Length: 99
Image (cartoon, rainbow, N blue to C red):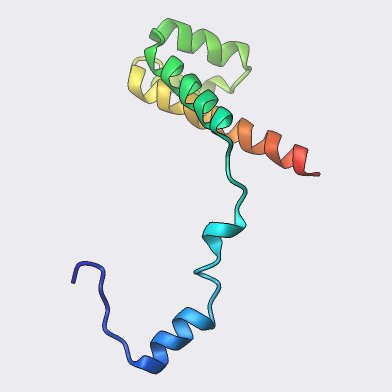
């Protein structure tokens, strides 16, 4: 219960010493404070936009209308769609920088 599992000593040793699960936190690149602030600013800006502005943004970004049209009457869903697209673009941009 509460995220605690009882295992034998041998199983505990295998889990801790023989898996890489404990290393994943340190292996990833950490975002700078500036990047975190920039991302938060963009997300907050998208959430504050009027639905008409969100639609204009999607059109200007040339996102497929078939993807975003179903959200065009629901501001929260449209904002979530644009934020998702922003995050995807950031990931693609980061991948290009890494090459």
